Length: 480
View 1 (cartoon, one colour):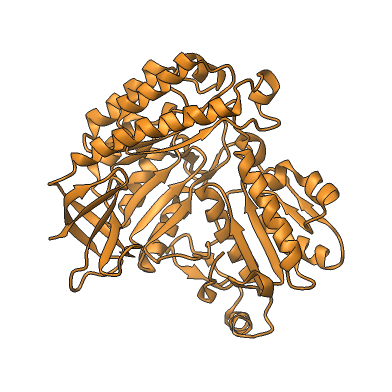
View 2 (cartoon, one colour; view 1 turned 180 degrees about the vertical axis):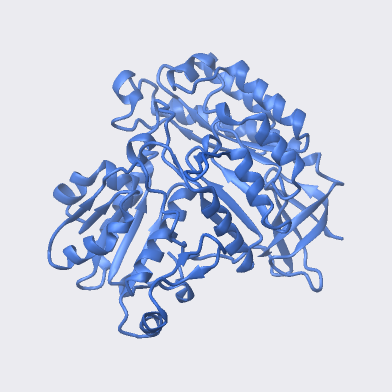
C-alpha cells in the first residue's frame, strides 16, 4: 500500500544523465500533471507480498499506471483498480493472498477491477480465473508493460491474462515510482530470473531464466536517486552475484563486482547493499570490492538452507557443508567486520535428526547476525515435489525450526555483545518505534542501532554512535 509521487508522471530514465525526462512533450506532460490533481482521476491500490523484488516490481507497475493517468491511494475501498503482487515461495504466502482477495471482493468499490501480479499469477492463473473467480486480471512478472491493454479489456468484461516469461525483459528503461519510501533507502533491480534450479524453489518457473540489466542504466538510476536525496540503495536480483552484462557496442563484459564498484563511485555518500546471493557465486572480487570501498556495506546475505551435505545435495545447492564453511571463513578473512545473514529450511524431505543437528552447528559456526528460517513447504511443480516425498511430520518441522531459532538467538546475542564499546557510522532512518525521544538507524553491518536524540541530527544524516548495550536484535548507544 503506497503513496504515489505525481512528480514522476509519465517519465523514463535518461541513460546519459540519469535524470527523469518525459517522452511526451511539454504540452502532454502538462495535461497529465493536471490529471494528477483531478478528483476524477482513476486510482489504484497495490499490496506487495514476499521478497524485496516484488516491492521493487510494484514500483515499476506504479510508474506504468501513472503514465496511464492513474494515481495511487492507500484506501482500498476508494480505488478503481486493486492489485496484489504475490509470492509463491511458501504455501502460507499463497493462503494469505487468497484471504486478501476475498476481503477485496467483499469491500471493494463497485465496478473496481482486481488483478493478481507476480509469481502466484504465473503459477495459479487458471485457478484464479476459472475456479475462484476472484480476479479480473492475472499478470506475470514479465508482462507489466501489457497492463494498460489488460485493464482496457477487463473494463469491457474480458478476463485479462498475460503470464509470458521473457528472455530479455528487465524494465531497464522505466523509472520506478518510489512508493511508501522514507526518501533515504531504495531498491534498484539489476537482474531478473534464476538459473540455479534448487529443488525446493519455484522461482525459475515463475520468473524465468537469468538476464542482467544494462549496467549503465543501473548507474543512471543510482545517480538519479542521489539527486533525489537518497543515501542508500540495495541492488536486487534473485541471484545478484551471477550478474553479467555484455556491452553490445564494444563487447566489454561487466561482472557483479565491477557493477558494485560502478554504483559505489556514483557518490561516496551513497551506501550500497545487495540481495540475494548464492554462495557459489560470491567471488573474491566481490569481497575485495566490499573491503576496498567504504560505502559498500560490510554485510552479505549467504543462504545456506541446510548444514548437512546430503540434504544440500537433495536441494541441488551445488555445494556441501565443508565448502560453505570455507566460504564463510574466506569472507571473515577478507572482511573481518563483515556481518553474514542466511536462509534456513527445516524438515526438508528425508531429513534425519542428526542431519538437523548439522544445521544447528553451522549456525554456531557461521556467527550469523540474522537468519530467515522456515519449515519446508512443498511447492507443486518443483523438482523436490516431483522427486521426493514430503515425509517429515509438520510438528517435527516446527520443532526443528524452534531449535534453529533458539540456537541463533544465543549466537546473535554473543555476536552483538562484541559490539559494545565500538563506534559505528549510522545512517539515521528516523524516530524509534518505542520512543519519540530516540532515533534509529543502521550501521554498515545492517544492524539496527537506537540512540537518544541529539540536536541537529535528522533522518538521512550520517552520525557516529558508540554502542553501550546490546540485545539479540538491537544495539543501543550514544551519538558522539
